[in-house]
Length: 498
Image 1 (spheres, rainbow, N blue to C red):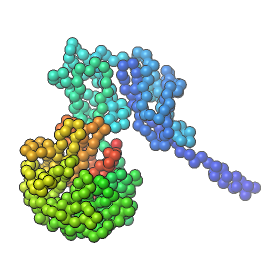
Image 2: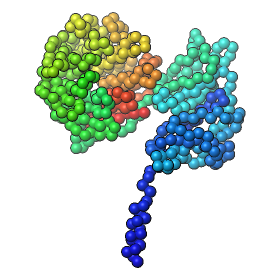
Image 3: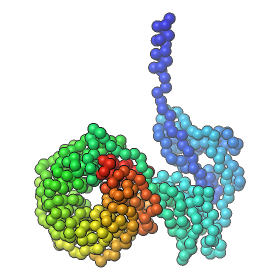
Image 4: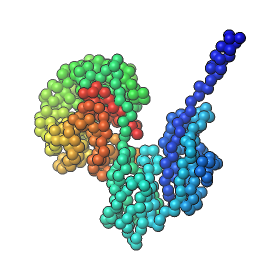
């Protein structure tokens, strides 16, 4: 009898339900003329969603929508009526999850004027809503807002008014809207990335990591370890280190070839560049000899040339990336050059000179310095921004001892604008936003923060992102969905996401 019960118990356990339940979505509500807007974040393991509406509290009501989107607009609403909504997530195996009791929302007609829905630029989810009353041909002094206080007071000027944004986790903090609007419209704010985790590996430890780049497909990240004499390879999907590749002495910067599966590693003490094939993650050939104490490098957009900054020689080496890479020519720049960027058309190099407090603009056609742009104290890292729409390209520089960044048009005679960011600004990453704008993130080595510069408003955002000790380098995936921050003293990489 005992044997029979034991067998029955084993059978019952073996037939248990191994399926998992999706997460439960939490709706956020917005109002617009004649409708209630529901949005929610996508949840793990959900294949689709359903929206139910009841007219009595604690009731499930009837299903009014189903689909794969994370947004629904209920247009069948009556003035001052309260409705109770339940959003269900449906898993691949049919399992359902939702929150109890339902969420309620009352439809209140918008006052006369313009109704604004404020949404997350990346997810499309409603953050808040507001309305602007019209007086005559202009906008009144009062801006009616929702309880989140996302907008405060507008300032009318030449038919434009400015919303002052106070929503934590979003930018810009101000945004301009044309008062000629006669219809309701949606205003999008860019979310500020959040810390998603930290990468460390006891078996394959980082040793004073200095730089990070992503492969062109965004599936792998590469981190140089200055005192490990190697490069760590990270799987971006899992955020885990899975390999280390031995290179030369004190590898600093890294550069990816945009046309070929090749990674170039600048070996500071050796005065060489190692080449890694990113398909098999193995070193290719022998290191290429360049100048003394190289620091940074950049590959031309056509993938034909590698330009290496030699801080010990005050030069830039031009390495032809033929079958056997070799140094073909050298151009002199300023005192103790450090960072380097290249224009979108491969015509100019921009090189920071630490002891001169300048940026050398190098003509690659003429192979000489065409002009010098004064910036802040001890400029280090530099980034180039090509704006397709406006035709104006920009350069942004971190002034290491100046506690600032310099932003200027990518041309001779430009006048840099200085923006205070914090102590010891180092690495810079440029993030393209879904609306075509750009955001610059700067690692603050002395403060363990990342500073944010919004190009839309040309302002430093008054929020920072806390990361590890001594953040020195930062990079964004080609898809723009993750940002890696290298923490040199903590021997870790902070992962940021949305």
